[in-house]
Amino acid sequence: MVTVSAPAEIKEQQRSRAAVWLDRAIIFWLFLFAVFAPHSIAATQIAWVGGLLTCGVRLFFRPRTRTFSTPVDYALIGFLALTLLSSLLSYDPNVSTGKLRAASLFTIVYLVAWNVTSKHVLRLLALALVASCMVNVFYTFGERIVGRGVKVEGVRAESPLERAIFVNEEGEAHPGPVKNGDTLLEVDGKPLRSPEELVAALDDVSLEPALIKVYSVEWVGVVRVERGRLLSGTTPLERLGVASWSRGRDWRATGFYGHYITYAEMLQLIASLALGLFVALREKRSLSGALLALAFAGMCGALLLTVTRASWLALLLSAFVITLVGLSRRAVLIMAGVAVPLVLAGLFILHEKRQVGFVDQSDQSITWRETVWREGFELLKARPRHLLVGVGMDSIKGHWREWGLFDEGRIPVGHMHNTPLQLAVERGVPALLLWITFIFIYARMLWRIARSDRVEGWIERGVVLGALGGLVGFLASGMFEYNFGDSEVVMVFYFIMGLSLVIERKQRDTMSAKR
Image (cartoon, rainbow, N blue to C red; front, top):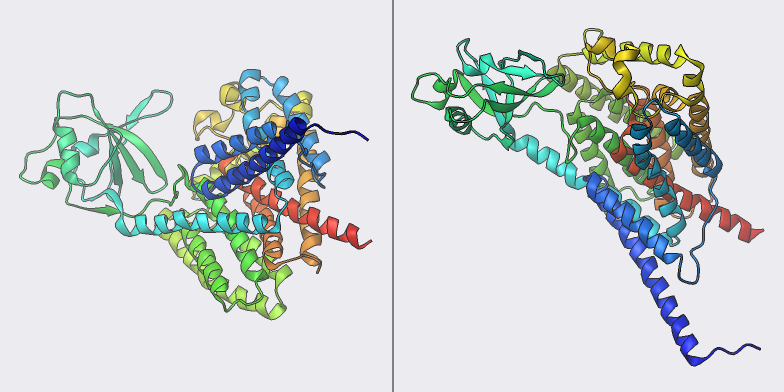
C-alpha cells in the first residue's frame, strides 16, 4: 500500500483547486464569446484565444480534461489538412499561410464541445447568444429612427459637391459628384451631423481637399472635395448649393459590424436559433415564448434593413425546415401565412432602397456574380494543379490581373461570391469534397437528433432545430456569397456547431448507459 505524505496531499488538493478554477475560467471565456460574437470580432477573438490558452494551461493539472470524439472529426481535420497543403503550395505562400489563422477558427468547435459538460451551462450559452444579439437589433432600430449624416436634396450645378472627385484603389481619379438623395456620413473621418459642420470643414482653405464619406444607393465611398469653393450666401445650405437636407435613413443596416452582408449572415444564424428555441418550447403562450417571439421578430426586422436578398432567402428556407421538422402541419401552414407579409415587405424594401427586383438582370450585383462565377470555373480548369490543390487562399488578390479576373478589373476585385466555387479555386477539388462531406455528416447528425424523441429539454431540442435551419440557410446564402470566408459569421456558425455536438454526445452517453 502506497502512502502519501501530508505535503503531497496538500499539493494534490491545490492542483485540484487550480483545475476547478481553470475550468471555471474556460466557461467564463465561452460566455464572453457568446456575448460578444454578435457585435465585435476583436472581443470575440480575445475570448476565443483566452479560452484556448486556458485550455492549454489546464493540461498541466489533474484530473486531465476529457476529450470527446465527434461525428465530424475526420472530415473536418482532413479538410483542414488539405487547406494547409494548398497554402504551402500556393502561388503566394506568404499570403495563404497568413490566412491559416482564419482557418484555425475550427478550434471553436472543440473549445465548446470538450468543455461544456453541464446542461445548465449549455442552455445558458444558447440563451446568452440570442439575448446578446438583441442589443444590436435595438441599436439598429434606434439608429434608423434617429438617422445619421446629412442627406442632401436639390444639389445645384455650381455646388462644390457637384465637383467632387472619387479616387479608386488604383489611384485613378474620376468625377464623383454628390447627387440628389445622397447621404454625407463623414468629413475627414469625423461623423457629420449638420450642414454647418460641413461648411466649417470646407471653409478652411489651409488644409488639403476634404474627404467626405458618401452613401449613394448601392455604393459607399469617399470623395474628395476642394476647400474654399463654397458659394456666397447667408445660410449653410446656400453656401453648399443645396436646396434642403434631412437625416439619412437609407443605408443598409450593419449593426456593430462594418458590412451589411456580415451582419445579415450573423442574423440569419442567430434568428434561426431563436426560432428553433421558440418551436421547441411547449408552452408558447408564456413569458419565454413571448420573449423568443419578440427576439425572432426583431431579428427579422433588422435583417430586412440589411436589404440582403441572399440572407432573406436563407432565413426563409431555414424557417421552413425548422417548422417542418418541429411543428405539426397545421402550425406549418400558420407560419407560412405569417411569412407572406414579411416576404412582401422585403420586396417593397428592396425596391425602395436598391431600386431593383428580387431577381433583376439590371442589378449590377447579379451580373457581377455571373461574371466571376464564369471566370472562377475557367481558372479552376486552367491547370491540373488548380483542380488538385487550388491556387492558395487569397492569392487571387495578387494575381487577378494575370489571370484576367473580375472582368479585367472593371468590376470590384474580391472573391467568387460562391462558397463551394471559392473553396475549389483556392484549396482544390479534393478539399471541397471533404468540406461537403463534413457538412453532410453534420447535417445528418442534426437531422437524426431533431427527428428523435430522446432529446432532453426543450432548449436542447431548440438548439438542434436552430442549428439545422441555420445550416440550411448558411448553405443557401453561400451559393451567392463566400460566407465561409467571413470570420465573424464562421465564429457564430462554429459556436452553434459546438453546442450541437455537446447535445449529440449527451444523447450518445444516455443511450450507452441504457444498454
